[in-house]
Image (tube, rainbow, N blue to C red; front, side):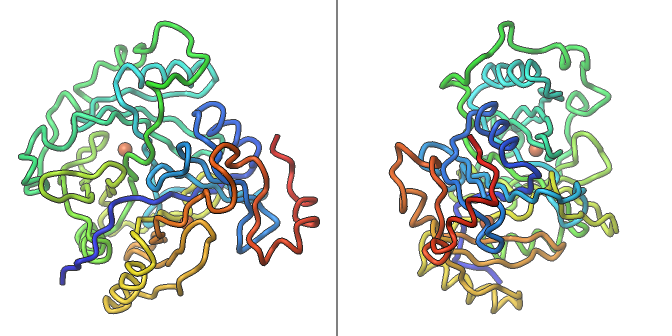
Length: 357
Ligand SMILES: [Fe+2]
Ligand SMILES: [Fe+2]
């Protein structure tokens, strides 16, 4: 079964944090993302839901955070996300990020040559692993651009742990302190999401049939040569869409299931063009035998939720109406926004929330 419904890529990813002011300091000030919406969790209005993104919160640029103040730390595993990668234009800009982060006391691992891009890793204050990955050189370095994902590729030795110059990697950094996020450092949204599955074949079938993603790379985890690492993306006519790579580590048959909590990704959301496509998508998913939520009005988009075979919570969110629906671009994220049905409770909601700034 194939589908005519093809997502263009990620809409957003939603993470869990313990402390909204701390999250704002990390993602807003240190990483320079824009706070594009300050609202509450519509299913639990006593807690913040913060949205970060580019200037207008374009789909693909958005990270959102549920503030669960007392949640214990979660753990990655089958059905969970291992890390989220944000894109950056150049290797020079990546080293500026390394300098900026290490000067702020954040431990950084890398940059490592992954072939298709260069990666460096760090953890946010809750323990979520974040990667900054370069835009290029892309997936066509070892396969033809119009025939990606055709065969299982073994990474060359120099990209594996035993082939690395660890000292050079550790010492590589920008020579000067980086006190502000310069335009060349601008983070370009979700470069990829890497999750863990216990059945690569089943998961692949799901991402292809449910979302219209296509396999663009079959290889091995470059930190662990025994684990397969497959990549899917919105890929058509030899072009891989930015902000669309979903990668999976194959822990075949593993019983190490992820645990929800702080420092973990709650769900990932893919794009639907509009409500008409959302309706068609819901019918398609139901016809696949999946259990799918009703269409939910999230004010800034409409959403449906369902689960991948390994348990990962997946959403499809419409591109519109977007974050400008209730405040102008110049002042996005400045005031607490509530949906109409929560406005009557604004006073009590504001009293429960810790002021952010
Ligand atoms: Fe990655
Ligand atoms: Fe969501």
